Amino acid sequence: MLALYLRDVRLGIRAGGGALVGVLFFLAVITTAPFAIGPDLNLLSRIGPAMLWIGALLASLLGLDRMFQADRDDGTLDLLLMASGRHMPALTVFIKAAAHWTASVLPLVVAAPLLGVLMNLDPKTAFGTALTLLAGTPAIAFIGAAGAAVAVSLPRGGLLISVLVLPLVIPVLIFGVSAAYALQAEPTPFLPPFLMLCAMTLFMAVIGPLAAAAALKWSGD
Image 1 (cartoon, one colour):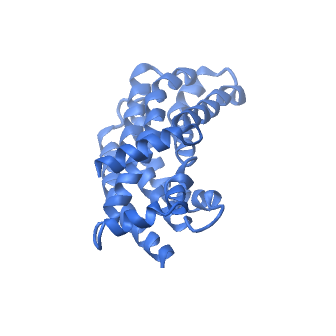
Image 2: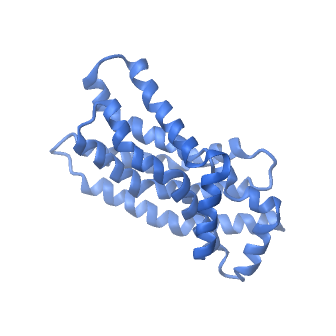
Image 3: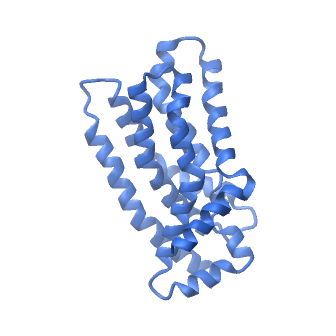
């Protein structure tokens, strides 16, 4: 499983620019926001956490179609699922989703505090928003794994994956932005929405791979 994880991380970084493409897309979303909104620094700081979350969410969707597609095309996916036995395909999917998150989404979390400067965020809010991204974006990867598994047999399933995944990640976005905004509004408690965000990630870490494994088995049949 460690070898599979390291292999997928290397492939995720190399394929199509990997992390660099996601960071550049994230940067494009954040840098264009001040031009559209104007020079109102107070407004930028108020919407900054939401913009960071929206940019990270959209950038996280970029490489989902590559999570299983290349392995399916060359037959590696069938071998992995057969080697996993009868009850372990979900674990294989979990490892591949974790590798996708490490290669494509973790760089966005690292870049978030720096991009928060463009949104006039103070260091506490910028790093706190990065913490919420660290806790919540794995849920997006696990949900995305299920969407990628459903569309893996389609020749151009990238758009379908986004259509399937976006409605399911809205609760993650809501709790992530709520936790980030709690850092700006001092009376608002940070811990409850943050713990809900962590709970959703843990829940999706179980449900997502199981759903993806079932979809892969169905597409293989």
